[in-house]
Image: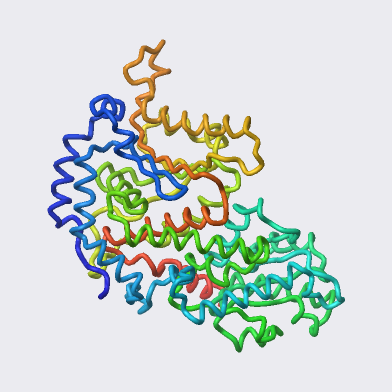
Length: 497
């Protein structure tokens, strides 16, 4: 089956949520805690090494029941089954959506297994020094040349897992800004650098422009014959790649059933695999697969992606909030927000529903944020005392990787305090003057993870992948195409002649 095509506003649950919103709109989170003992326990749960506390939301148990009723009326379970069964749910492009198949070690597609074996063998050669450059020197630096999903995902994961990195120095070139390319090249030795060109069609303007500039720089200092020792590619266009001087055994596959922004689990993540080693890369995949199982098999009332998605819909469509903040209390996750912006906003930034009709309700949320106490000293003032309601996701790890307990205790204290302050404000408390009055009543979720590992990072990324899928299902839009992006590319090409 394909995805259901149900306008959510026509459902019984939506009408009931409309009426319910009028009764709860003015309720204060602090009052909700006071009126219901055990609220935190009732609205939080643990799955493996992740806990979700969603008690600091402007909801009651009735709200949650109606939101889950909406999910059922929009046939969410049928949509989940269609995705995991490989149906062509990306109807506008006639493709399945199977990035989850990239990490399913229980029933892995033969071509995926072959690609992982190729990645393992290649990364081990590079890491151990068995792979030599054209002068016989070992590789010391890797440059990933890509854009969008061919850059944001691998770059985010590589930085997030810096603690697990080996000796290789990894760089990412994406923007077609020539100054950025040249600044990167200034740091590199052509004798000890390996370049990974990532482009499904091998026609992406930014990637090919950067790759051509880098190849020219390399040849000026080496030779045409040396290209095969220093350039590999991730692509489906074998002929074009071979024309670049890259030998066929150094071409890694991509598939049309994996969207670019969900491709970090594939050979697109080759730079990450080299940076952290195949064993850690496999743990990343296995963590994501564990979250796939949780999403697919768990009842909606204890399903992390479903609950986060339905809460987001509650605020976006009933409170008309428009934006949501993601606040990771780990500097390792500095690029997570950038990654989620592409994943969420490119997927769900749609105004035509699955019936081909314009929507008359809000769809994609605007995602933004920053890390930890940096955010507190930047934009958090607006969340506390501004005029905009902005739901937030707090993400924290209970254990520090380097074991610095003093720093970690202060980091976590700030994280928990910010969530409490957003919810409580100065509500019901005396203040010196109105300038120090905080309304509070700002909602948030708390995702607490035991430790930042490749496995737990895989779970976290997959959690947000499934969240945006649920949102797209409920909003009755196609989440896996990006015609707006394609139009911009065509217009830029036309201007260049």
